[in-house]
Image 1 (cartoon, each protein chain N blue to C red):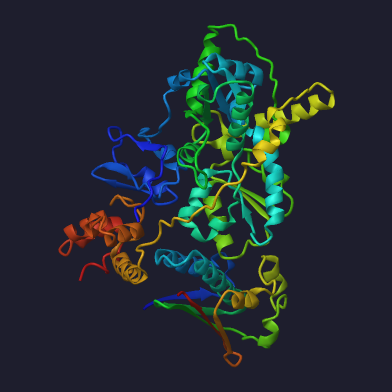
Image 2 (tube, each protein chain N blue to C red; image 1 turned 30 degrees about the vertical axis):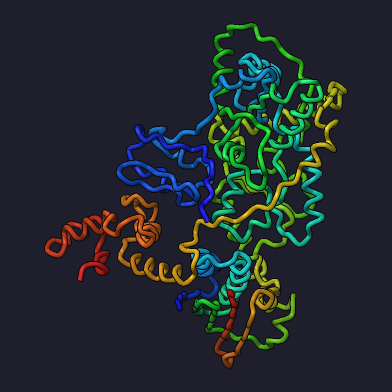
Length: 138
Length: 449
């Protein structure tokens, strides 16, 4: 069992994806199947960018054991008003500014769902969001 | 299973190398180490991009080529030259003069590599259209990029188009042409004149193919020097041979940046320079560049015009090729061009052989086949990494502190190889100021109790 922790800054798009890149390298070192690495990379990157785009700050915790990769994203932010809506492709609350940077196309959560085995999103009563992603590697 | 040996064109001359570590710092796949004062190549990591060769201050890294005199073993001696060859010469030398100069070196035929590009253009468009589930399709043109993806981006191997490069198509077609003209197979020697190391490696150990019809490889700089010297001496009155077969404009520009992307339907992007390519491959891996249909990636800046074996300035080469293409269009509009291309006659023959087999990933990053063991190693790497200064000076012989930690865990180096640690331990604990003068205050907190 291994754990990796990263702090994610809200609003700083220049650094978006750095934590994911770091974990991706570790997954390659672990010799996971390329198809699984790709799935995890996409889901992880989307979740990381979600924090950058929507929250003030957040944390990413990645736990790896021989059966699964569990990713926990907790942020301090406005939370997701309507989780069901957010799961629809093309639905986005991202600001015009964020969209102009090429983010906020409303594909984030649907993309995470598509690229994970388990996805749990919890609203932390207006104080933030918790996203738990699990991918089985066996 | 034994690790397959890969042919590498890059060779380090031990007697010249003095272990300066310039090369290890520029390698995009961390494939070089210095030990006992000499640089060493880790064979299954090297992708033959040639950046190390450019960085070497004493020319200790060379590209092995075949002996030029090997051409004389054959009756039909073909110089298969890339279009950038013309760009090596000053503008007042015409392409006909240059090709005559090449013939005078002992070849019987000069044939340009990019003759296969028109066929490839159709084939790529068909490939992109008939594989809608593969996005983006990544070009297989640059062998250094193909190898980069194999070793560093194993999950993107399936995005590489399974089509041959123009080089292969041209050699298949021209060999077929010579056979048709009645020349015996054993008398045909096709010699590829290469602008880079990666193409040599691709010929000697092709990815996704069985073998290549090419008999040998000659470096662009060697042939250029021979031809240009003969022009300077003007020892012979150059016979000017008529150019029977000419490249079409898109073929002339095929090996330049946007050479492919310009002609492929859909949303395309062309990227040159290996660092730029790596950055973009990371994005594709993260799923943020999926809306592209086709990506052209070239290892060298300005693509093949910037090949490591070229002598002319890459921008001038590029300019000359673009000018040549414009001239062709102009001459054609005035009815001055009759282009009887043999590859057009052999089109269906060539098309049958355009596909290559599956490309396998061969990740260099894996620490162990066994995941549990790999996890243990990662833990140790992280532990060791905490003690290292993070300066990435290369003094230990590994390119970065992190790679030193990896090498230590893999049993290939010692933590004490770090010259910073050596220095700190030598000075401390009685006189830490001396080391702190160089490395800064607080750097020793990790290691000095």
